[in-house]
Length: 290
Ligand code: AMP
Image (cartoon, rainbow, N blue to C red):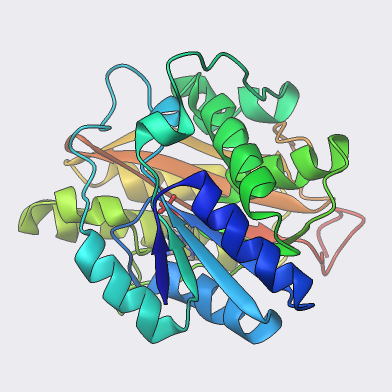
């Protein structure tokens, strides 16, 4: 496994792979890797001849009062995990390599990025679209792997690739959870033991909402209320949002009559965590309760 810190190094390595007829999979990450990231790398390993993992805490996707400086970092440990999961190349650029002083071009998106996390994180998706576009141009992968954990991000990337005619397959991978249900996240390390227990309200809320939907409940308000109730019962939790949206537009829907995303963002103390469930195949597509 190789480590590249410059764009030129990555281009040289990938050029040779392409010359040899190898397919390339890319897994973009911010590092501090856990089993969620590893599931993406392992999937990429199965589906491509070569696998690139980018590790870059992207400054442009953090707002002024967010956790850019305190975001956890551990390159040595990440490298060991990447090697074990079968990555061929880690791309670990400096912020100056990705954003030289003269940098002034951004990729922005309307509609999808204005809802859910976009409301409390107004610059976030512009930063995500910009850095992912740059990574796509640098690595030129055949496929790129993203987690359903960040469901809005996945929808945004799919739309960007479609709108801007990028010839890359976007592969969504299921959420990996801790044994007790909490979705794995690099930000879970911020939680005190007491907060870690309290954080279980996220997955409990998601599982309860999913169960209602699976039982045939189609009224989004009924499901949202149930989900909110579970979170509100926990004193350390503060809801940012609990929403059920059309999977294609991210706009709220009153009835579960189309593919949807039920998404939550919750502060546990100062740590903002997200979780979700999606349904693309409805058992009762007419939206009429049976
Ligand atoms: P991050 O390092 O948080 O930017 O995440 C990098 C990629 O890993 C994103 O596509 C995430 O959606 C994905 N990811 C993070 N946590 C999980 C998880 N628990 N299960 C599946 N994918 C995840």
